[in-house]
Length: 281
Ligand code: FES
Image (tube, rainbow, N blue to C red; front, side, top):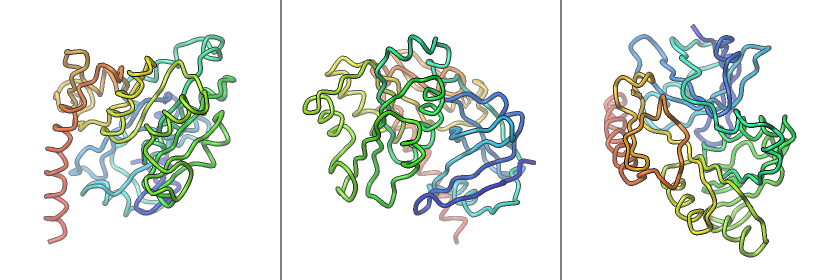
């Protein structure tokens, strides 16, 4: 069993939880994820790792109440335990294998959307610990749904905020802010790493393609076994079928078939909301 040792409300319906999982904490790397099961009959919920402490033996997850299982997870309290906490799964971010020297020469911009800000944080922190200061755009609907901005500021180069309603930072989409940074403020980037809603990553990749900036996206697909056996997480990248759980979750954003990925995600959402409704009736 995996105990919830800390629970914190970050924004309406968005919770941070530290889970006691020493083995996962010891081997976790930025970019990887876990698959959580609340009880032995529960479904498997993939969640990207948002932080970890190998010495203290905990792993941070951030979750939003979007369906039946995530609502149940968010309703759990400190001291409660999860039945399964499998991981770390997936490949670590590509830059983990690179020399810090080479990374320090690269100008990296992270684009984080909504809850996607959580998995961006360990990546920016990992880079910062090696002397690499990456810039970060955090996008959200409004100022109340922004998360982890102070933590991010402590490890990033510059942090730029964009909100849909203009209640904090730049008024507009993250892609509008990206254009503003590059065209008006003269910023230059060699690489963009985008994590957030599929639709956001699609438009970030479309924008960076115009500027010729290499782009990595982290795909939050449906997952079942997390071992490459069931095919639930399949996506098309560069015309080839790839399995997000074992070959991802990060892929070249210019090669991903986002429309197909969103169709598959939509099918899953319909089942999830039906289950949530049934549970309430
Ligand atoms: Fe089953 Fe990836 S989750 S193959």
